[in-house]
Length: 573
Ligand code: 0FV
Ligand code: MN
Ligand code: MN
Ligand code: MN
Ligand code: MN
Image (cartoon, rainbow, N blue to C red; front, top):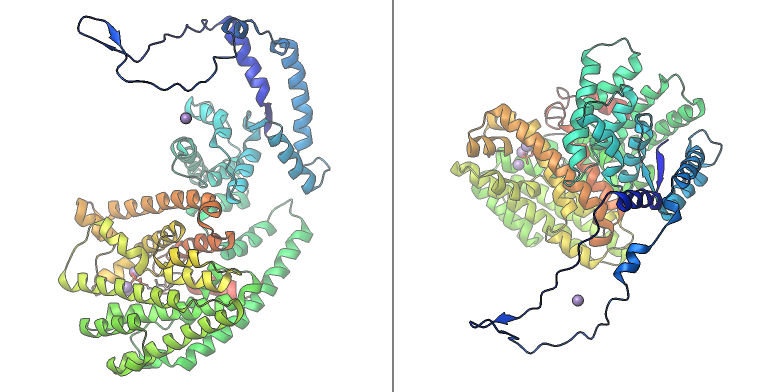
């Protein structure tokens, strides 16, 4: 377990060295704010007020004379003995309940005791604690890794326990921009160690090796949770020290939740059949299973089936309308559709080309139905927000269609201002907000409606960049607006490989910002943790969907079919 320092004890050690080593403080040099005349006579330039503050209550000589008996060696020894005892209390195998352990950590913090990793053997526990605390929104300082950082920098870190290194690696992804040590020292160190471990093909058990490969492929913090659960159940089964009850519990729970998901999928698939859109618009991606799969990535708990059903419908429309704009529609038709969504006026339906009419009418009806449910149960009209999300999406689609038509090549910055919206994150998360929240706030609706929530922008940015990495090869071959990779190549003259690496780096930086925003979101933006989690999950789901190419457009080739089979179809035997 990580070791403990009394905050006050550290100050005592400093006091010892101050008495013996440091020079005495120099006396203050006081200057008055006066101006000198040419003949060197000082005069006040302005009439001054006085603060009427009393003089210092502290006498300088008194301060120098203070003696503290705790600054003695024998007290430090006593402190270290006590530290050992307290550390024992924190040991995982100590027979105390989880609540007692948590209360102890809380007491330690409130008692002014600093929790720090001071030995390499503590690395695993420190890294694990750090990651869990940050994952749950607590602001723990990266300084708890200082001892390790020093050792890495002086090349004296001997730890080659791969489990600890993986733990350190996973912790190093819970970063914000200001965590320079985690970025600059810890993450590269851990990554390199794991890579060597994997490449070295060392004689280790297969279970650990698989864990290392999995971590290198993508850190846990970025992974789609439900798929990770399915993976981890298999990994856990192979663990030599697994807890059988825990394993059986996880397995049966997974299968029960899966049966809920299957029922929802049946419902959503029937809905899609009834719309007849796949038949009417044969150029559109027919992807209802994949659409539903996205929603499981956003929120997977069994009690939220209604949200998943609504979101699957929303995503089906996004996929359909995106293909109308990117593949099939002429510019004039797209302009008509954009106006129709903006006016939201069913009386003008016949102004649309025939092939667009059913699509718009069903979108209109479904959106109003959701709005009606929310009005009934939450007594607030969200239709203006939902409608505006669709109108904004279509406007951004139209911008891209125009750019493509004109051969315009935006800078990465200009592209991204549009693209985090055109990837549809605001539509999805605005629906999520309305359907999920018990208390809908008009003020939050206002910020969502104006696209002013940072967490939505970050989520949309990760989504867009991941989408571009996975889909742009086919998009460019077919003909489409330049995506982030091509914009960067055009702007900087970089090769495609360099541009892709740059986009990966942008994803990583966006995660840093997202981590920062989510740690402050509760207080500053009135967003619930549930909403923030959904935004993070949408980013994770995007990285899952495009991990092996275009998992949405080409589900078989890019592994989505396998994943759907294991998450939604096949129970764990
Ligand atoms: C559009 O893909 C599309 F189908 C998306 C974004 C996936 C649907 C899933 C959700 C809305 C959650 P495409 O690569 O064609 O998107 P762009 O914007 O690049 O045309
Ligand atoms: Mn003041
Ligand atoms: Mn598209
Ligand atoms: Mn598009
Ligand atoms: Mn795309």
